[in-house]
Length: 301
Image (cartoon, rainbow, N blue to C red; front, side, top):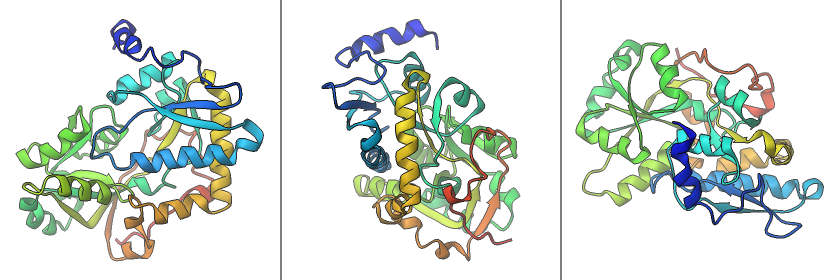
């Protein structure tokens, strides 16, 4: 999208400071984040807690921070463009691509310690029997997965022969499950159960179902990104998140947060069938060699 088309959005957010990292006082750094993608985006609270705690741990070396939110939510493409322009947004979470690694500064600690790459499926109740009858990966590939238009996941799945329907808005994916546009919505085991619970509580007349006897796995971490001019914020987040890994707080947050706790204990997945999908697009800059940053499930053949 041309930058000129973003000008109205920038002007609409003009109440926010136009410094790369604004300060409410000379001492407190304001970190501007995106709001929820939709009411179903229950993982947002986890991300906010992670930013708050990691920056708190870094206060001694980088000073205190506070978090503010953009007043409106935009598509991921527009959010990343705003991050690149600078001034109205300081940090976003996104799956890494070569382009994003070149365009922005990433904080090289996987937000969900790699568990985001293990995908359960949200489906319509009418499709439960279909999914329970799956015995081969080819059968799953013949069904249609809902994915975001700009999500790297869509490319990863298509590279391996999966059928994908790309959808612009997060909340639309749940509707596509009902109208038959998609057969399933793959979600990380750290996010899908919370999203499904929230959706069903608020849509009792048209509930959706889970299917997790089969998981899809591809290595796609979620990372925090900021602009190149925000190098101090990137360093602050890197320091704080590494501390959370070192002292066990990151794994503890995963185990205890209402959204992510359903993934634990990890031993519960030992009887699940896991179809591994290669991620040929994973940038080499992602620290896959740092084993302390990643959690893994035991796969069944």
